[in-house]
Length: 121
Picture (cartoon, rainbow, N blue to C red):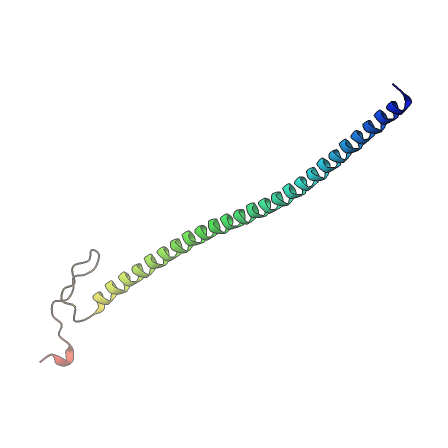
């Protein structure tokens, strides 16, 4: 080979090497862009996961609050019913026109007739 052929061959190899370097640079830039896009989508996914977790937490808190409120209401209703029944029984015991009162254990039987002193004629 002549010197000119050797130089041409060297220049051709340098051109091919430069092209390979440029292709490698493009691959590196594409890889960086894919990494940036992946990082952005991961951040969005993490934010979505956090929102879902917050919503689930709020749902659980809501269910617990509903259960507590229902228990409190049930206790309150039971208390009102108990007080009403006690009041109703007491009203029956002291109401003078109550003729249908049944015997209550521990209490004297109801009076059958009453005669007041000022009506005693």
